[in-house]
Length: 204
Image 1: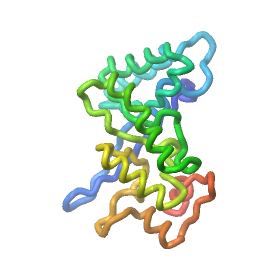
Image 2 (image 1 turned 180 degrees about the vertical axis):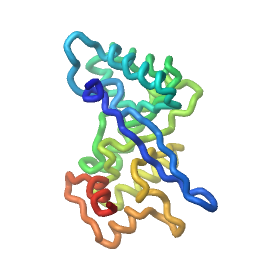
Image 3 (image 1 turned 90 degrees about the vertical axis):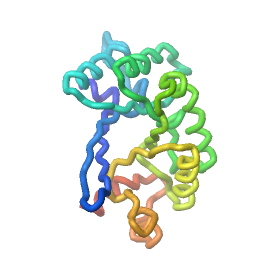
Image 4 (image 1 turned 120 degrees about the horizontal axis):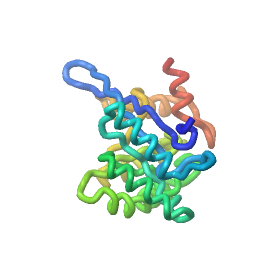
C-alpha cells in the first residue's frame, strides 16, 4: 500500500562480462522525497521510516534514492526524508530537479534541470559519489539528437545512467540496440510516447 506513495522501481541491469554474460539486479526508489498523496495520519518521514525498515530487514544493499529537489520548494520539511535515507546508509542520485521529461523539453533545458538538482545532492552526499542518474519516466528523448546530446552531457559530468532494460546496453560496435532500432526506423515514438514500454513489447 505504501508503495503507491513512493514509487519502488526494480532496476534490472545486464552487464557484459568477459567472456560470459552475468545478470545484476538493483533496487531503486524514484521521486524522493515525495510521490503521491499522503495516507491519513502519516507524514512523508513516517513513510520513509517504514520503507527503510523494510529494506534493512531484508538486508537490501545500497538502495539508491533518486531525488527531485524542486519538491523541497513547496515542502522544505521533506528534507527529513532525504536525511533519513542517508542516515540509513543508502545513497542518493539525480532524477532531475523537477522530474522533467526529455520528450517534452529541449536537450539544453534538460541538462540545466540535471544541474539544478546537484546542490542538494552535494549537501547530503558529501564526499560520497552521487553521480548516478535516472531518466524521469525512463524516457531518453524522442529524437536521436536529444539522446546523444544529453548522453554526452552526462558523460562529461561523470554521471552513470541507471538503466532498466538490457536492450539499451552498449553494443560492441558502438551505440545501443535502441539507437540502432531508431536509426533503422524499426520503431517510432510519438511526441509524448513511452519508448521503453514500446521497446519492451517489441523485445518480448
